[in-house]
Length: 475
Image 1 (cartoon, rainbow, N blue to C red):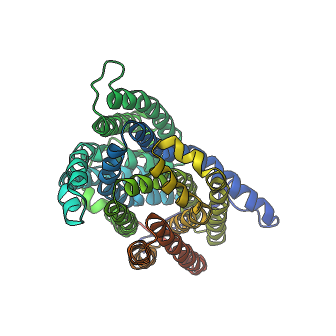
Image 2 (cartoon, rainbow, N blue to C red):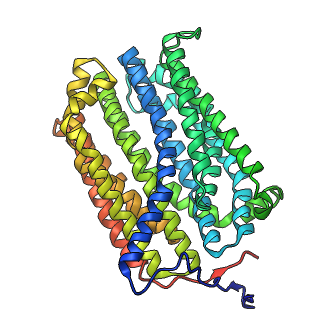
């Protein structure tokens, strides 16, 4: 038995032979990390992809129903997605702190992370629901045409109903992923997508006895599905056989003080993701100023980027957990190796995924719409994806590795520089001043992503050389 030091720190657990690196054979360490990365990343990626596949289904069904409705839905998603992703960032500390506790083999601490995070999740959900409900004023002040502002505002109200559910699902999924148990989230996401496909088509076109609601039907489907997912995964966490080992039913008292470390990690991650998604939302609003065709084309291209980004996000989440577990063991060399393998693997996978979009952009555009003008504009930007995919995915893997290593605000500053001070002004200049139209927006994304991945990789090189501090138990 290991006795805890009297100064408030907790001694690290004895090395786990199954998890410890093999010092004599470095290639074994690389193979082990790749194996664990893909084992964890596969179900996480499927779950992340499922979130976007629902949006892709919305885009395809609504786009083939009505191009104007697609433009309204894309603009409505801009503030909703920005706030939802900010909320997911605020909750990132759940996965990180759970993985640290998992690395120390402290199950009660892992369960306490989840119990303290749930009330915080509900608080964030309530605030962000109110803000999304009021989105129409944002469309007006950013110069959206009256038709787009009015219809998009109505759709944003419907989408806001699903905001708390999206964040509840996220907290439960992050907790399970931190324990390296991502399968329940994946299964629930697959089932949700099957339901979404039927309900979406029914409510948009008025099939299967449902009313014909057009774009509103897609928005209602999204909110209903998010609540089904949230309640299902919440029920799984409460009923899991090992709930006693984690103390999951021990109540939520003292949650604000107990969630301090999770919140502090989340503030930095939330600010970072909030700035990035807000910057992309600004680009969507720029596209809206160019008219319905530009807004629809930008939305299609961004849907493909976001869909493939979910693969990167799955790999990045797995990277964060792998780095976090090594961090919890205070194994600095293994932590560094986990981070670099995650970054390089993510960039390689993303490049491979971009090749079909580069080779057959016209076929991809035809999946979403039959509008000739929208197709032509979409094709002109899809050919840039071999540059955007690896750099955008790589920066997410790098920032996840930094979060897993306990780095808080430096990655946020790098995101601020890349996406607020580089992407927005560059995209605006190329689009409106240089006259490049929608293509200028995506060149702005290219430049910002290159800046981001370079800066974050350098930062991880610095952080991964530092000693890992001893864990200090909460008092």
